Length: 262
Image 1 (cartoon, rainbow, N blue to C red):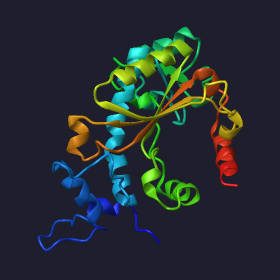
Image 2 (spheres, rainbow, N blue to C red; image 1 turned 90 degrees about the vertical axis):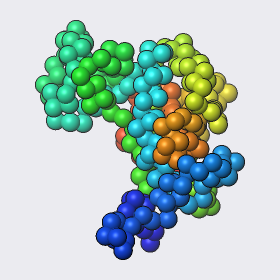
Image 3 (spheres, one colour; image 1 turned 180 degrees about the vertical axis):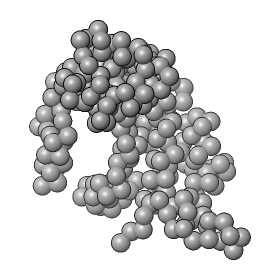
């Protein structure tokens, strides 16, 4: 069985002769990425542990990027309604006012109508004290799901995994989605690797379980990403219309995964 990717940080908890935790091979490779020429976008990462460590390092950086792109294009994020109460989320005053304007209670999850309360404009909450705590950010693809996809679709070649680190931005209008595309394309730290336009009428929606969006694969080459050796890591950003997102749910996604695995 493959060892845990988290052992890439600690060497499986073993101590070195100095008494400090040993640094294992994957993390050692990432630490060496500050050396010019060590990372090369034309030379894929073929070690799953190293790829996953890069995704872990890239995760908070991608969140900062999607916040900036949403701010530039009137984008929305999904509210985190999984917690027992929104008071516990540290929901800011402007978001509370927005709920009041809509005639909604924010005391309990059960009081929130679905789907009306699922999305919030980033521009409405960005100045709150802890705005990120009210958003349901996409987590990393789990190691188990990543290994399953690598085996099923990519002949165990992990270099084809381009959605370990991913986020989504939502839009009420197609025009706003297009504005976000322009903001991403104009970002000097971003290199677009691939664009899947599932909003194109020519796209066969049966291949995506009826779901339509614009999916971007991109690299972020910034000072921050270089510091953690993740500037060549390919991330995924999905641009989704709220009208489409409202009919998508976790159960539907599970059925789609089962369909793809047939």
